[in-house]
Image (cartoon, rainbow, N blue to C red; front, side):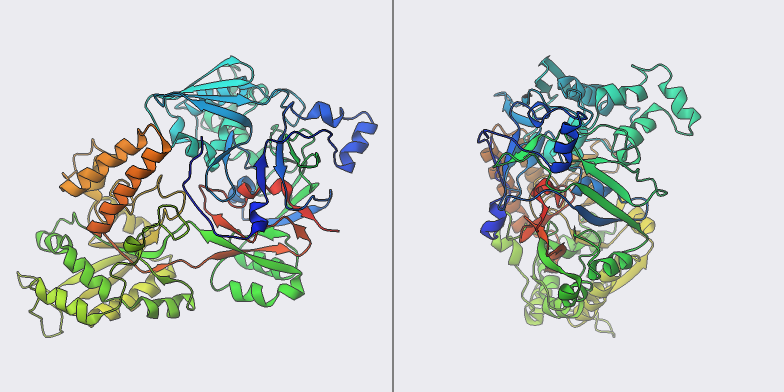
Length: 629
């Protein structure tokens, strides 16, 4: 099964990092492991690998050795550990985010009704402690932990209600309560790793079904119960316990607990991947993550050549010139990252606002078009983003297979004449002494737009928009407020207008479609309509218009679609309706981000998608990175 959800234009160098099923006649290993074999501390590499190791074709056959230096910020940056050293889920995203590829599971089958997924594991696959990895480990994670209400922390929502069974040690059968055409995408995402992170032999000590003292022990340690202990030791915060066995390329040796620094890792002797020449991966021996307090410290280390590869926390427009100018001095180079965000700032007028006069005005599509023509996006891009980016609406990025050029570019032309003509056409011809147009009831059209005070970029953009809209007779009152207040207003439908970045521009758009149809708590342009999807039992709900109802029906059918082709066709229909409805007003396409890589580091791609769902840099297969001699 292949799922085409994303495309990326890049060099052949990137596409040389691929998955292949070619057999390898002979296997070799890192010198440090060979020495351990000679000392009888380890079995031979052929006994440590599964019967069918995953073969990766690297652009360059790497050399063994070295330490990959990076950073973690503060004591709550486990995201970097998960992204760089921990992305080995059951199945994984392809590097270009163009599909799903085998990983820990060598293959899978899906029943005709879309309810039963059968995953085939690799015979002889072992945990980092040398014990067998089997279907029982996955069953423990799915049935005993993820689907337990007592488990604390993030859980893959796609697994709620899923029942896992194992007809044999190398087969996992997952039965879904309802069809989910995005099930594989969810398993390949960053949180899907939880399925294969919980070695039953180790993690069951924290579960009361296997250890009657587990709950009491957790509470005596100051935790709420066994669920929190499981999360800390085997869940998303597992980096605090280096004793937990892993299937990933490196074994953590020092806990990430805010006390011990640096956090270090060493190679996993039982890692299940090899390159096309039969060299067991990873190439790099060790990882070293220095704990720092803020982004400035990362920048200073980066320009000094003390970081080998990262894009975490540093890839801002203001930092890029600093890194660019110091490349020769620091012995590194820059590579591009393509953000999954499709817009820098989306203005969302509340189409379900409680005031009748403004609600009627906001729902008038020509009014929204007029505001869009009244915004000089080029001025904003030059002033705020140093000329980087282009005028853009709320639409999938050009790199996405769902790109819709009309949706992306409609009404982005700055034309005060067109804006004024439209505003006059809909009857807003009267103005007060300040030049602000008046509603039919005589009130001035002053739109209160809430901006979170901890995001200076939004404030900068909206203050420019405020001045630009004054020229067409529309008042925009930019109200900066603490984040919790802004969200309280939005969640309770009290906001007139809201601004936020554009999520869902790449492969994540089909999963997080908040800006294309009202289906999410963050669909701030129509919160009462959105509740029909995510909170239908809420008494504060509003029957949406026919076009929105049509979109929600299509979205439901999309999840239940029997094939990927049908699913994608339905999503394109949703985007076509979004184009026609023009719910909200975008500003610009975010410019590419960047990362830095040591000039000695090999197999670094020229560019890569950057997202949380697609946990950059993990899908590049970081086990292929190596230091050139």
